[in-house]
Length: 184
Image 1 (cartoon, rainbow, N blue to C red):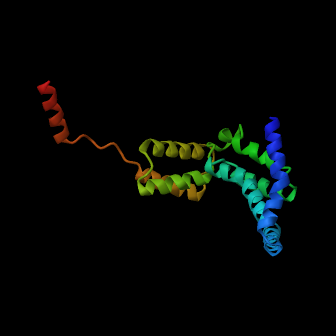
Image 2 (cartoon, rainbow, N blue to C red; image 1 turned 45 degrees about the horizontal axis):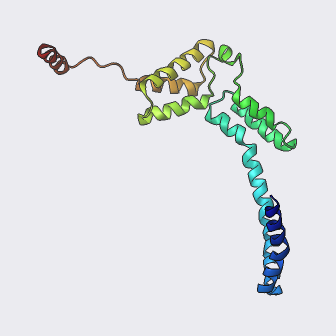
Image 3 (tube, rainbow, N blue to C red; image 1 turned 90 degrees about the horizontal axis):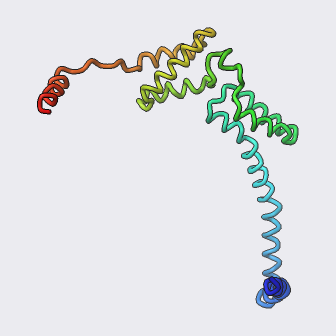
């Protein structure tokens, strides 16, 4: 421990002298000028950018989780900027807790964008059939509680048209299955 302190003290004492011995004062002045310009211009811009990225985290998380009140969370993040960040913890907590009575009142706990995203996935053939059934069930649940907005009604109609019905077994598959049973 004592040896570490001695080494640290010697570096602190002798380093400026060694640097000054090898560099001219003009070089040190140029380095100091560029360092000052960097600190004055770049550091505040970077600090503001980092602050804004942190401030919109609840909004991004709510969007990713398809929170039903993501628009309100977005507004709370904006208001938090106005009020100096005091509301930001509330937005963060709100992002992870869905309202208790929302599903009972509206029939779903997803934002409408979730259904639009599911429709886009189904159009591309990337939505599994069980997920497609879940989305249709959610839309039916919403329709049972309230009138579907026209946009969601179109989504429901498209998804219902895209839902694959179970195809009947082909005679060729049945014959092959019977042959295997006979071979066993």
